[in-house]
Length: 282
Image 1 (cartoon, rainbow, N blue to C red):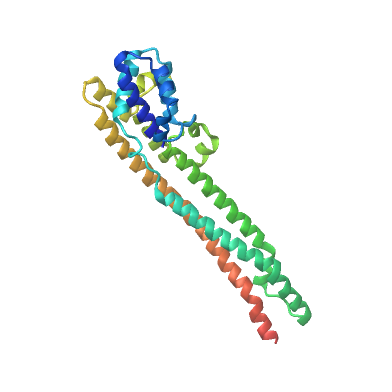
Image 2: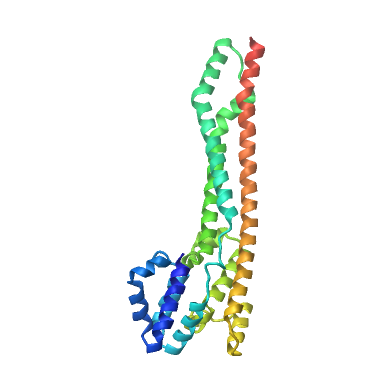
């Protein structure tokens, strides 16, 4: 996890800062050490952790950098932000169900349906309407299912990126179009909580404070310890994000399931209808 590495860098800097070392040079030096890899892979460039580090590196206020890194050194975001397991299970389940349906439908279209059509012609029997309908329109059903499935995969991927705090996703047009505002609001709150220790470094990007941001700033200004408040608020907002994401995915899953189940019913009716017609003809 990038947060494990991020907090480790801040802890090492806090130890080195006793000698007044520069944040940017110190962090770069720590990054080059082999032991740093024990705390995870290099921090991704589009992650919030990397944006915070870069912001602190370019800050011209040594006191702010020292205080912010000290707070981050004592926090642990990895245990506060967890992706819901249901997201993975839901996507996997629907992908498998869709693949099974598409496989059976393809086998039926290629090998079984032509044999039935040949028998109907030989016996001079009119194919049942359900059979004809399935033969003519099954490809459209499959296309609709695939589109819905791709949509689900994209949405779950976007939500996964939110839990990983990938900052670039907030500027995506598809993200703004497909993700509900309730989920985006929770994500924005989490971003404010995570960046609070370095808030003044981000002041140029954030013109106003939300209720959570104002509260944390008030706690800091009063001289109180902000670490417990950051951890507790982060857990609360992460749970909210998880609950809202799961409810949204459940709605999408229900819509896709209805389409898939309807397609399976049509497939069964269309596949067995010729058998009954052939039985009557014989």
